[in-house]
Image (tube, rainbow, N blue to C red):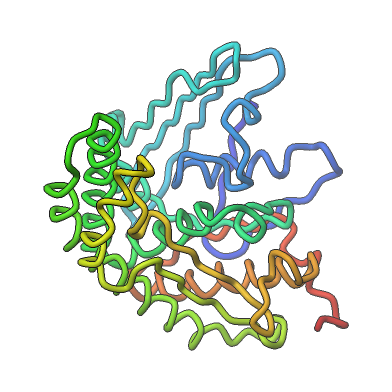
Length: 293
């Protein structure tokens, strides 16, 4: 898709008939912040039919400072992402932290189902991203934990003792668990929008509250061939009347909850960053009917 768009501060609405590319524009804006689809589709689904790549160019202003961002993504014939190059002011970004702190975008789509209906990894990914923006220390603990857990997986598969890796990841796991607990408490206290369904709540379900207990199950981990305990297997359970929304809520209730979380996070991030994150909303009012429950 070729073209240029200029957006001013405030609310910008995009109108047009179905199939005119409205979602593509929003997708491009969101991709500049988190280089993956905000609708949860793979990169190949974002490429124009008959092409093997896409290119996004943008000039953003943060604190009145202009920044040029370019994203180039190429896919192979099997639909796998072959190349992904993200540049800020013509310099390749080295870390995801640099990317999502340069241009902060919060997105919502009424067509996106993975956050509410998908596996626990989808909710962990979303909340980890939000927490990483709010708490830089959290981000660094998360990066280290993920690095060590991968090394631990390899060690177990090769028949090595995982004890050194387990000891190394414990302080990172403890910080992550405590930060997630506090974050969910604040979410439940702060989510007061009138369009949210009655009885709504979020529960953080760590599979271990004290990371040192991971040492006790090393024998079982060796037996099963993979790490059993840690933040990489935790769940954020979203409920209505203490029942999982994934199984019991209507589509309207799910989307309203998702939208409420996004709007609340924007408020939190605005206070933290002293800057308003960009909101990308794709058909946000579809489920905000007057007869909501």
